Length: 260
Image (cartoon, rainbow, N blue to C red):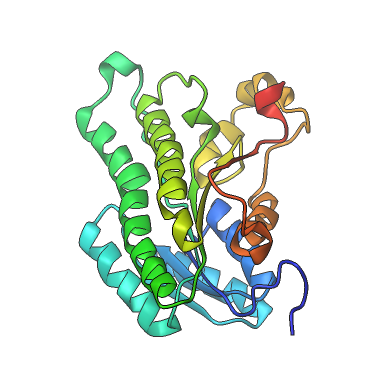
């Protein structure tokens, strides 16, 4: 018996980078709606902490040590999730990182490639392997699935000194649109979430900068940093059957910053 429009009790959700920040905020929203959760993260201790946190929702949670920039790790761990849960209904390709390399003309090539290897290659590997499973399911009569790429406002706006990060996130946006068009025939929908200024480990340096707070956060119409919990609702919506006809879209979660 369904528990409501966002009931996920029969579904399995995979969240990369799900052991902290926005990923964990999404995982909490999914778990609260009854989804079984698979978390990928590189840090074993953080994986365990996230599993303990999600245990309060009385759902099945498994964690996996995965570096999404490593193709073989992604391939092997998609198989592990399928062995453990039997299926994957939604995927949130959230794992990401940034390297602040100074001015564009001074940026280190290795730093550039490192950012893209996680933020773009990692999304590609993750969604390529999980859509294979969803397509096979669809051909067997079990149609449907949701894949979500977590990008950033940096993917659609100009951001000085973070061009590799911006390029990677712009690439995610375009990739998701292509997936949405190609895989709609299987009932698979693909959407992108674009966070604004969110208080996570990645933005600690800016959170501790009063000048940044005065100049930037004061321009956020809601007058605050976003928080990981602000992504719980959109995750539940995109994983649920309520979004079955919603694909190829960009969800900007930024407190109104982009339009002000």
